[in-house]
Length: 381
Ligand SMILES: *Cc1c(COP(=O)(O)O)cnc(C)c1O
Image (tube, rainbow, N blue to C red; front, side, top):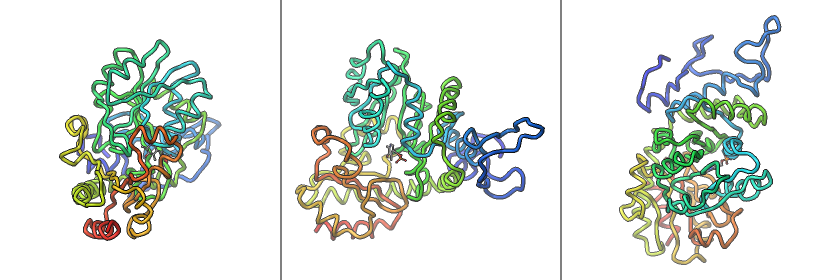
Protein backbone atom coordinates (compact mmCIF):
# COMPACT_ATOMS: atom_id res chain seq x y z
CA UNK A 1 0.00 0.00 0.00
CA UNK A 2 1.34 3.43 -0.91
CA UNK A 3 2.59 5.56 1.97
CA UNK A 4 0.05 8.31 2.31
CA UNK A 5 -1.57 9.91 5.33
CA UNK A 6 -4.84 8.08 5.15
CA UNK A 7 -7.55 8.73 7.71
CA UNK A 8 -7.80 6.33 10.58
CA UNK A 9 -10.67 4.12 9.31
CA UNK A 10 -8.68 3.57 6.11
CA UNK A 11 -5.44 2.90 8.00
CA UNK A 12 -7.23 0.31 10.10
CA UNK A 13 -8.40 -1.65 7.09
CA UNK A 14 -5.24 -1.38 5.00
CA UNK A 15 -2.67 -1.34 7.82
CA UNK A 16 0.34 -0.29 5.71
CA UNK A 17 0.56 -3.80 4.29
CA UNK A 18 -2.80 -5.11 3.15
CA UNK A 19 -1.89 -8.02 0.92
CA UNK A 20 0.66 -10.75 0.59
CA UNK A 21 3.52 -9.45 -1.56
CA UNK A 22 4.12 -12.92 -3.02
CA UNK A 23 0.64 -14.04 -4.00
CA UNK A 24 -1.56 -10.97 -3.72
CA UNK A 25 -3.69 -12.72 -1.10
CA UNK A 26 -6.07 -10.28 0.60
CA UNK A 27 -4.45 -10.80 4.00
CA UNK A 28 -0.87 -11.29 5.07
CA UNK A 29 -0.49 -15.04 5.62
CA UNK A 30 0.17 -16.59 8.99
CA UNK A 31 3.86 -17.39 8.57
CA UNK A 32 3.87 -20.44 10.79
CA UNK A 33 7.61 -21.09 10.68
CA UNK A 34 10.24 -21.00 13.39
CA UNK A 35 13.21 -20.49 11.13
CA UNK A 36 14.13 -19.18 7.69
CA UNK A 37 16.42 -20.53 5.01
CA UNK A 38 19.80 -18.83 4.70
CA UNK A 39 20.71 -19.03 0.99
CA UNK A 40 24.39 -19.88 0.65
CA UNK A 41 24.67 -19.53 4.41
CA UNK A 42 23.62 -15.87 4.50
CA UNK A 43 20.44 -14.70 6.26
CA UNK A 44 17.73 -13.03 4.19
CA UNK A 45 15.21 -10.52 5.60
CA UNK A 46 14.29 -13.04 8.30
CA UNK A 47 16.53 -15.53 10.04
CA UNK A 48 14.75 -16.95 13.10
CA UNK A 49 11.13 -16.23 14.03
CA UNK A 50 11.83 -14.88 17.52
CA UNK A 51 13.86 -12.09 15.92
CA UNK A 52 11.12 -11.26 13.44
CA UNK A 53 8.67 -12.71 10.96
CA UNK A 54 6.33 -11.21 8.36
CA UNK A 55 3.09 -11.85 10.30
CA UNK A 56 4.47 -10.08 13.35
CA UNK A 57 6.08 -7.26 11.43
CA UNK A 58 2.78 -6.53 9.73
CA UNK A 59 0.89 -6.03 13.00
CA UNK A 60 3.76 -4.14 14.62
CA UNK A 61 3.81 -1.71 11.74
CA UNK A 62 0.02 -1.38 11.75
CA UNK A 63 -0.15 -0.37 15.42
CA UNK A 64 2.89 1.91 15.12
CA UNK A 65 1.19 3.64 12.19
CA UNK A 66 -1.97 4.17 14.25
CA UNK A 67 0.04 5.67 17.09
CA UNK A 68 1.94 7.92 14.69
CA UNK A 69 5.23 6.18 15.48
CA UNK A 70 7.82 4.19 13.56
CA UNK A 71 8.59 1.17 15.72
CA UNK A 72 6.37 -1.52 17.23
CA UNK A 73 7.07 -4.72 19.16
CA UNK A 74 4.35 -7.33 19.46
CA UNK A 75 4.51 -9.31 22.68
CA UNK A 76 2.87 -12.44 24.06
CA UNK A 77 0.55 -10.42 26.33
CA UNK A 78 -0.06 -6.93 27.61
CA UNK A 79 2.04 -7.75 30.66
CA UNK A 80 4.89 -8.96 28.42
CA UNK A 81 4.63 -5.59 26.66
CA UNK A 82 4.81 -3.78 30.01
CA UNK A 83 7.82 -5.91 31.00
CA UNK A 84 9.45 -5.15 27.66
CA UNK A 85 8.86 -1.40 28.05
CA UNK A 86 10.18 -1.47 31.61
CA UNK A 87 13.33 -3.27 30.43
CA UNK A 88 14.46 0.27 29.56
CA UNK A 89 15.14 0.64 33.30
CA UNK A 90 17.95 -1.14 35.11
CA UNK A 91 18.98 -2.02 38.63
CA UNK A 92 19.42 1.10 40.76
CA UNK A 93 16.90 3.12 38.76
CA UNK A 94 13.81 4.69 40.23
CA UNK A 95 10.36 4.85 38.63
CA UNK A 96 7.34 6.98 39.51
CA UNK A 97 3.90 5.46 39.02
CA UNK A 98 0.30 6.03 40.07
CA UNK A 99 -1.10 3.71 42.67
CA UNK A 100 -4.33 3.16 40.77
CA UNK A 101 -2.78 1.01 38.08
CA UNK A 102 -4.26 -1.92 36.20
CA UNK A 103 -4.11 -4.79 38.71
CA UNK A 104 -1.52 -6.79 36.77
CA UNK A 105 0.71 -3.75 36.39
CA UNK A 106 0.33 -3.07 40.09
CA UNK A 107 1.52 -6.62 40.77
CA UNK A 108 4.46 -6.27 38.37
CA UNK A 109 5.58 -2.93 39.78
CA UNK A 110 5.11 -3.78 43.45
CA UNK A 111 6.30 -7.40 43.43
CA UNK A 112 8.64 -8.01 40.47
CA UNK A 113 10.45 -4.72 39.81
CA UNK A 114 11.86 -4.47 43.36
CA UNK A 115 13.51 -7.88 42.84
CA UNK A 116 15.27 -6.40 39.81
CA UNK A 117 16.60 -3.59 41.98
CA UNK A 118 14.20 -0.99 40.58
CA UNK A 119 12.48 1.13 43.17
CA UNK A 120 9.01 2.52 42.49
CA UNK A 121 7.32 5.49 44.18
CA UNK A 122 3.54 5.69 44.01
CA UNK A 123 1.95 9.10 43.96
CA UNK A 124 -1.34 10.75 43.08
CA UNK A 125 -1.08 11.43 39.33
CA UNK A 126 -3.92 13.92 39.38
CA UNK A 127 -1.46 16.27 41.12
CA UNK A 128 1.60 16.88 38.91
CA UNK A 129 3.37 18.56 41.82
CA UNK A 130 3.35 15.21 43.62
CA UNK A 131 5.13 13.60 40.67
CA UNK A 132 7.66 16.45 40.65
CA UNK A 133 8.22 16.04 44.39
CA UNK A 134 8.93 12.31 43.97
CA UNK A 135 11.79 12.86 41.49
CA UNK A 136 15.21 11.99 42.92
CA UNK A 137 18.67 11.71 41.31
CA UNK A 138 18.04 8.04 40.41
CA UNK A 139 14.65 8.62 38.80
CA UNK A 140 14.62 7.40 35.19
CA UNK A 141 11.00 7.10 34.25
CA UNK A 142 7.35 7.94 34.79
CA UNK A 143 4.72 5.24 34.18
CA UNK A 144 1.31 6.61 33.19
CA UNK A 145 -2.15 5.16 32.76
CA UNK A 146 -4.91 7.63 31.93
CA UNK A 147 -7.75 7.43 32.60
CA UNK A 148 -7.03 4.95 35.35
CA UNK A 149 -9.45 2.16 35.99
CA UNK A 150 -11.88 1.57 37.53
CA UNK A 151 -11.63 4.99 39.24
CA UNK A 152 -11.15 7.00 36.02
CA UNK A 153 -8.53 9.38 37.39
CA UNK A 154 -7.08 11.49 34.60
CA UNK A 155 -3.38 12.44 34.43
CA UNK A 156 -2.41 15.68 32.72
CA UNK A 157 -0.29 14.31 29.88
CA UNK A 158 1.08 17.63 28.65
CA UNK A 159 2.19 18.65 32.16
CA UNK A 160 3.76 15.25 32.88
CA UNK A 161 5.61 15.17 29.54
CA UNK A 162 6.92 18.70 30.19
CA UNK A 163 8.11 17.68 33.64
CA UNK A 164 9.76 14.54 32.26
CA UNK A 165 11.56 16.46 29.52
CA UNK A 166 12.81 18.99 32.06
CA UNK A 167 14.37 16.16 34.10
CA UNK A 168 15.28 13.92 31.14
CA UNK A 169 12.97 11.14 32.26
CA UNK A 170 11.35 8.50 30.09
CA UNK A 171 7.59 8.57 29.85
CA UNK A 172 5.88 5.17 29.45
CA UNK A 173 2.13 5.13 28.95
CA UNK A 174 -0.37 2.28 28.98
CA UNK A 175 -2.91 3.35 26.33
CA UNK A 176 -5.03 0.18 26.46
CA UNK A 177 -8.17 1.96 27.63
CA UNK A 178 -8.30 4.72 25.06
CA UNK A 179 -6.60 3.04 22.08
CA UNK A 180 -4.68 5.17 19.53
CA UNK A 181 -8.04 6.15 18.06
CA UNK A 182 -9.04 8.17 21.09
CA UNK A 183 -5.73 9.19 22.64
CA UNK A 184 -2.69 9.96 20.50
CA UNK A 185 0.03 10.24 23.07
CA UNK A 186 3.18 9.98 20.92
CA UNK A 187 2.04 13.31 19.46
CA UNK A 188 1.85 14.68 23.00
CA UNK A 189 5.49 13.71 23.50
CA UNK A 190 5.18 10.37 25.32
CA UNK A 191 8.26 8.19 24.64
CA UNK A 192 6.88 4.67 24.86
CA UNK A 193 3.25 3.58 24.44
CA UNK A 194 2.01 0.19 25.59
CA UNK A 195 -1.15 -1.71 24.69
CA UNK A 196 -2.75 -4.82 25.92
CA UNK A 197 -3.99 -5.86 22.46
CA UNK A 198 -6.00 -8.49 24.34
CA UNK A 199 -8.53 -5.72 24.83
CA UNK A 200 -9.82 -3.29 22.17
CA UNK A 201 -7.20 -3.85 19.44
CA UNK A 202 -7.90 -7.59 19.24
CA UNK A 203 -11.47 -6.89 20.30
CA UNK A 204 -12.98 -10.37 20.36
CA UNK A 205 -11.86 -11.85 23.70
CA UNK A 206 -10.04 -14.59 21.81
CA UNK A 207 -6.36 -13.91 22.43
CA UNK A 208 -3.67 -12.47 24.68
CA UNK A 209 -1.37 -9.94 23.04
CA UNK A 210 0.57 -6.78 23.78
CA UNK A 211 2.32 -4.12 21.75
CA UNK A 212 5.03 -1.60 22.64
CA UNK A 213 5.40 1.41 20.37
CA UNK A 214 7.98 4.18 20.16
CA UNK A 215 9.09 6.76 17.65
CA UNK A 216 12.58 7.05 19.15
CA UNK A 217 15.20 5.14 17.19
CA UNK A 218 17.53 4.72 20.14
CA UNK A 219 14.78 3.42 22.44
CA UNK A 220 13.59 1.12 19.64
CA UNK A 221 17.04 -0.49 19.46
CA UNK A 222 17.04 -1.16 23.18
CA UNK A 223 13.47 -2.50 23.08
CA UNK A 224 14.32 -4.78 20.17
CA UNK A 225 17.31 -6.14 22.04
CA UNK A 226 15.12 -7.13 24.99
CA UNK A 227 12.19 -8.30 22.84
CA UNK A 228 14.43 -10.69 20.94
CA UNK A 229 16.66 -11.57 23.88
CA UNK A 230 13.87 -12.30 26.35
CA UNK A 231 11.62 -13.85 23.72
CA UNK A 232 8.07 -13.12 24.98
CA UNK A 233 7.06 -12.42 21.38
CA UNK A 234 3.62 -12.78 19.81
CA UNK A 235 3.09 -15.93 17.75
CA UNK A 236 2.13 -15.70 14.06
CA UNK A 237 -1.46 -16.87 14.51
CA UNK A 238 -2.11 -14.34 17.27
CA UNK A 239 -0.57 -11.63 15.08
CA UNK A 240 -3.15 -12.52 12.46
CA UNK A 241 -5.94 -12.23 15.06
CA UNK A 242 -4.77 -8.77 16.14
CA UNK A 243 -4.51 -7.64 12.53
CA UNK A 244 -7.99 -8.97 11.80
CA UNK A 245 -9.43 -7.34 14.93
CA UNK A 246 -7.88 -3.99 14.06
CA UNK A 247 -9.83 -3.77 10.82
CA UNK A 248 -13.08 -3.20 12.70
CA UNK A 249 -11.66 -1.25 15.65
CA UNK A 250 -13.27 2.04 14.68
CA UNK A 251 -16.68 0.52 14.03
CA UNK A 252 -16.58 -1.41 17.28
CA UNK A 253 -15.30 1.44 19.39
CA UNK A 254 -17.70 4.04 17.97
CA UNK A 255 -20.67 1.75 18.62
CA UNK A 256 -19.55 0.67 22.08
CA UNK A 257 -18.74 4.23 23.12
CA UNK A 258 -22.18 5.43 22.12
CA UNK A 259 -23.84 2.63 24.08
CA UNK A 260 -21.58 3.32 27.07
CA UNK A 261 -22.91 6.88 27.28
CA UNK A 262 -26.50 5.64 27.08
CA UNK A 263 -25.94 3.08 29.83
CA UNK A 264 -24.04 5.58 32.00
CA UNK A 265 -26.87 8.11 31.78
CA UNK A 266 -29.56 5.57 32.54
CA UNK A 267 -27.65 3.86 35.37
CA UNK A 268 -27.11 7.24 36.99
CA UNK A 269 -30.88 7.67 37.29
CA UNK A 270 -31.47 4.27 38.88
CA UNK A 271 -32.34 4.30 42.57
CA UNK A 272 -30.06 1.34 43.39
CA UNK A 273 -27.02 3.15 41.98
CA UNK A 274 -24.94 5.46 44.15
CA UNK A 275 -22.73 6.89 41.40
CA UNK A 276 -21.58 6.34 37.85
CA UNK A 277 -18.04 7.21 36.75
CA UNK A 278 -17.67 7.77 33.01
CA UNK A 279 -15.69 10.52 31.25
CA UNK A 280 -18.60 11.11 28.87
CA UNK A 281 -20.98 12.21 31.64
CA UNK A 282 -21.43 15.96 32.10
CA UNK A 283 -20.67 15.61 35.82
CA UNK A 284 -17.40 13.72 35.31
CA UNK A 285 -14.93 15.52 37.59
CA UNK A 286 -11.97 15.78 35.19
CA UNK A 287 -13.98 16.06 32.00
CA UNK A 288 -12.22 19.15 30.67
CA UNK A 289 -8.73 17.69 31.19
CA UNK A 290 -9.69 14.34 29.70
CA UNK A 291 -11.13 15.89 26.54
CA UNK A 292 -8.12 18.20 26.17
CA UNK A 293 -5.97 15.11 25.48
CA UNK A 294 -8.43 12.46 24.27
CA UNK A 295 -10.96 12.41 21.47
CA UNK A 296 -13.61 10.37 23.23
CA UNK A 297 -14.84 8.93 26.51
CA UNK A 298 -14.19 5.29 25.65
CA UNK A 299 -16.40 2.27 26.12
CA UNK A 300 -15.81 1.45 29.78
CA UNK A 301 -17.67 2.84 32.78
CA UNK A 302 -17.88 2.12 36.47
CA UNK A 303 -20.85 2.30 38.76
CA UNK A 304 -21.30 1.78 42.45
CA UNK A 305 -24.30 0.20 44.10
CA UNK A 306 -25.72 1.96 47.15
CA UNK A 307 -25.77 -1.40 48.88
CA UNK A 308 -22.58 -3.40 48.26
CA UNK A 309 -24.39 -6.43 49.66
CA UNK A 310 -26.47 -6.49 46.45
CA UNK A 311 -23.52 -7.11 44.13
CA UNK A 312 -23.96 -10.88 44.26
CA UNK A 313 -27.67 -10.54 43.42
CA UNK A 314 -26.80 -8.41 40.41
CA UNK A 315 -24.11 -10.82 39.24
CA UNK A 316 -26.63 -13.64 39.56
CA UNK A 317 -29.44 -11.85 37.74
CA UNK A 318 -27.72 -10.32 34.70
CA UNK A 319 -27.68 -12.57 31.65
CA UNK A 320 -26.02 -10.82 28.71
CA UNK A 321 -22.63 -9.67 30.04
CA UNK A 322 -19.91 -12.17 30.59
CA UNK A 323 -18.84 -11.74 34.21
CA UNK A 324 -15.07 -11.69 34.08
CA UNK A 325 -11.94 -9.61 34.36
CA UNK A 326 -11.11 -8.07 30.96
CA UNK A 327 -12.50 -5.44 28.66
CA UNK A 328 -12.59 -4.28 25.09
CA UNK A 329 -14.44 -7.25 23.56
CA UNK A 330 -17.43 -7.25 21.23
CA UNK A 331 -19.41 -8.72 24.13
CA UNK A 332 -20.22 -6.68 27.21
CA UNK A 333 -18.01 -7.65 30.14
CA UNK A 334 -18.99 -6.97 33.73
CA UNK A 335 -16.16 -6.93 36.26
CA UNK A 336 -16.27 -6.86 40.00
CA UNK A 337 -12.91 -5.10 40.34
CA UNK A 338 -12.61 -5.76 44.05
CA UNK A 339 -12.44 -9.53 43.57
CA UNK A 340 -11.32 -9.84 39.92
CA UNK A 341 -9.14 -7.29 38.10
CA UNK A 342 -7.78 -5.79 41.33
CA UNK A 343 -7.54 -8.93 43.42
CA UNK A 344 -3.75 -8.44 43.62
CA UNK A 345 -4.18 -5.08 45.32
CA UNK A 346 -4.20 -4.90 49.14
CA UNK A 347 -7.58 -4.01 50.67
CA UNK A 348 -6.35 -0.73 52.20
CA UNK A 349 -5.03 0.46 48.81
CA UNK A 350 -8.32 -0.46 47.10
CA UNK A 351 -10.19 1.48 49.76
CA UNK A 352 -7.92 4.50 49.39
CA UNK A 353 -8.53 4.48 45.62
CA UNK A 354 -12.30 4.24 45.98
CA UNK A 355 -12.44 0.68 44.67
CA UNK A 356 -15.13 -0.47 47.05
CA UNK A 357 -16.83 -3.84 47.21
CA UNK A 358 -19.93 -2.24 45.62
CA UNK A 359 -18.10 -0.97 42.54
CA UNK A 360 -18.64 -2.67 39.19
CA UNK A 361 -17.03 -1.98 35.84
CA UNK A 362 -18.80 -2.44 32.53
CA UNK A 363 -16.85 -2.78 29.32
CA UNK A 364 -19.67 -2.10 26.92
CA UNK A 365 -19.84 -4.35 23.88
CA UNK A 366 -21.60 -3.92 20.57
CA UNK A 367 -24.89 -5.65 21.43
CA UNK A 368 -28.09 -3.64 21.01
CA UNK A 369 -28.00 -1.13 23.84
CA UNK A 370 -31.71 -1.60 24.58
CA UNK A 371 -31.12 -5.28 25.28
CA UNK A 372 -28.21 -4.38 27.54
CA UNK A 373 -30.25 -1.81 29.42
CA UNK A 374 -33.25 -4.14 29.84
CA UNK A 375 -30.89 -6.76 31.25
CA UNK A 376 -29.21 -4.41 33.74
CA UNK A 377 -32.52 -2.76 34.61
CA UNK A 378 -34.26 -5.98 35.50
CA UNK A 379 -31.22 -7.28 37.40
CA UNK A 380 -30.97 -4.04 39.38
CA UNK A 381 -34.63 -4.25 40.30
C1 LIG B 1 -5.46 -6.16 30.52
C2 LIG B 1 -4.57 -5.01 30.73
C3 LIG B 1 -3.18 -5.17 30.79
C4 LIG B 1 -2.53 -6.54 30.71
O1 LIG B 1 -2.75 -7.15 29.50
P1 LIG B 1 -2.72 -8.76 29.30
O2 LIG B 1 -2.89 -8.89 27.83
O3 LIG B 1 -3.84 -9.31 30.10
O4 LIG B 1 -1.40 -9.25 29.79
C5 LIG B 1 -2.41 -4.06 30.98
N1 LIG B 1 -2.95 -2.84 31.10
C6 LIG B 1 -4.27 -2.63 31.05
C7 LIG B 1 -4.82 -1.27 31.20
C8 LIG B 1 -5.13 -3.71 30.87
O5 LIG B 1 -6.45 -3.50 30.85
